[in-house]
Length: 489
Image 1: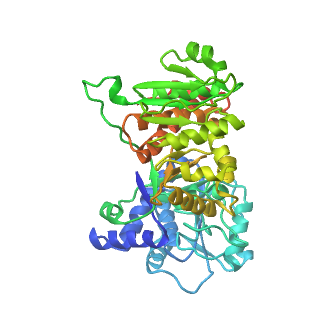
Image 2: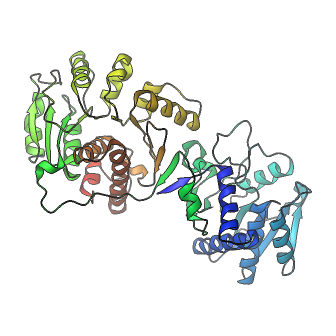
């Protein structure tokens, strides 16, 4: 798991590493440039390179990258944009080093912009993570020309013009890279859907920044790239791993009940009882024989809350429907539950329509809305950053964990921490995937994981299984049931 820092914390991380390693800033820049170049050449080996540099440390990285490529007999053209009389000290050192072995061109106006060869990859080293206002003048002109080139573009650390941890404001002109190779840890901006065109494919390049600084520096944002599971004791039995209740399904949506039940069982629950409308009894017994099945008196909907005392955790909502009887059923569940509930789908839609139910949600419950369901709960948002802030307020107010589902699903905790998930793919964007996730998270809570742990681990393993399913079948062909079959613990 990696911490996600803001622009000032990133600068402090560099400074701390320089002071404590110790290492000079120019040598740290060299280390970063070597790491970037190694990964660059693994992506593009038989091409030329055109590198555009600003006059700060991001530009210094670009000059060092150019020198390393030139020393390897790669064809490199370098252009420094003359947007300021000022230049950083490390930029000047690398400028002098590069100028000794090759020509460094300058761009003072658009007439200086080069004709770039069609075999070239463009490296964007113009502006780094310190940008906090829209670009203008020659910078804006050059960025627009680069974006119009239709050539592969790769950004050093972050696309020039993109803010690290705040929304784009006004008429921003930003590099639209195909790739971003960022140093050490992801930037918050990479994880916002609205920024997709300004990030492209991205990955972290380790450059040896201080692990002590990362460990001791406080942040609210985290990148989940691995999870830890509890080891099962040898003398465990089915009672050790909890008894979950899934209150799910309605006429025409028993499939959602089946998917959530199968996922729950595949995720290690000790005992599972499904509570479904009477119409689903034969389907559930035949489809999921490992689960116990209890039916509601109503044929097509859930209407009467069962006795909840024996259950470790309750999952409710998948395929539920929104009839008046079901609304009364959900209210009774919320009133009687003594432990966290996993709330999904129509359970969330009912709560959004009956806002008085919000106060009844048990502490540390987990809400798993898709985007429209989330909007019904928290209202409209201006941008992805605003959405995140609204969810943080909601999570804290109602003491619940909220998932912002999608690529890089965000798990928002009541303490205002946010965990972005690294697994998953667009093939999971199909009806039923959320039912699978509900089953997984419910099973984890049953086994003794905290709500926070269950949400973070559940989302990660759900996405991991989805990635394996996509590798086997392709994103277009995969089904939610494939995700269940690929679960590995």
